[in-house]
Image (tube, rainbow, N blue to C red; front, side):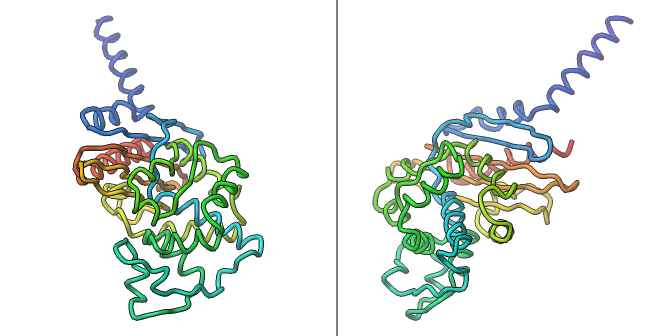
Length: 292
């Protein structure tokens, strides 16, 4: 009888321990994958922290458009730029052969559009031309680096714009972040430690409207879950290697609490479908942990 009771208690304790951390589930998701996977989770209200390879410096790809947009909004906060100022679009800055819904919209010729539209296309639709237009307004990647450094963001580096990454596959590895850095900078945004209240709310709203990567972090979450996010992807090179398949996000739980999550899949020889499913499965396991 005593042995039975002890066995039941042991099973109960082991089950409780597994519920306290999503590690065993995440390990089962990534263990047989031919990829480096960096993961970080940060609970905003309860202080929960989890990471796997969280300090590895991995290529961001378009995730860096979050950091660029934040730097632009800092300029707006300080009166150096305004949201309604007109930005000229033409063949010179709407380059062909790159992902650009902005170019597709204004394909008939030159146009002048408000800065806010460039930001929204760059973040929510991951527009590559929009990204480089914003960087030019800032004076280059050094301005973004200086801004992030000034806010105490560690484990982050930006050196090249989208056009430069398109010319040189290896350039993406110089634009890196750790997964831990990504969740920490999202927490800084949420806490109002990056931008003014107005700019914080604006950027959160834009990220909530993101339409790329629907098969990644949000793929298995309940429909309608508020997720403020930014995706990134490199595609494959001629050797079949994926440099980056990424996403970072702030997730709002049914009880109104929040967590940040970052998943960076790097140097993967898996298919795009497998890489994205990995991110989706990790996201679901974290969601289940917070909603247990």
